[in-house]
Length: 266
Image (cartoon, rainbow, N blue to C red; front, side, top):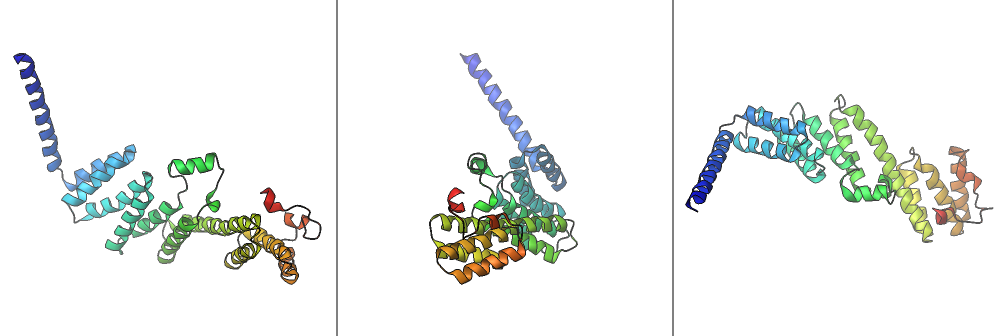
């Protein structure tokens, strides 16, 4: 029994010694060592460990280029770890602290990407896999914010290496937001809220006239005004649809001959 207790004590003391050595080594790390270790974790995909090391670096060495780079790469690590709110907060902190930093454009880019990403979490997987829902069918708040963040990057840093990709994402996001308006208009049509449907579709046409959603938005306006017996407005919407989309598939389903509501089949 005594031998067992002695063995346990020896093992505990050895473990404590090893732990103390590890802590002591950590305490003696330079800023460069912290950064190197954090980058290794980041490259391994161990984002949580990387974030912890970047945080320790900044706490231990709050000034200098390594601390600044740690702040920036913390935003990236949060983004890769699918924590958009934390990524945005870290990016905005960097922008606030270092507005003239040579790499501040990257912080703007990460901020935009964090709102743009549509693949976070099990709920998004369920929406895509089972409900077949895309970005335009969901609340467009994140898409709008992402658009504004990318626009801020392009406006302030037009020659940034991230600007071309940001412009492409802006074009996509504009289509997403516009299509969201059309989804809402469809929703109102299905519930026979024709005034609301017409207003929402009209908003899509006015605010996003050069997006693909304009075609269907005009058709919704045409059908909603037909249901409301507002025939002058119906004819105006149809004229605009014919003028801009002469080969539209919606023109095969006119208000005069239609016997079934397309939005009830959607």
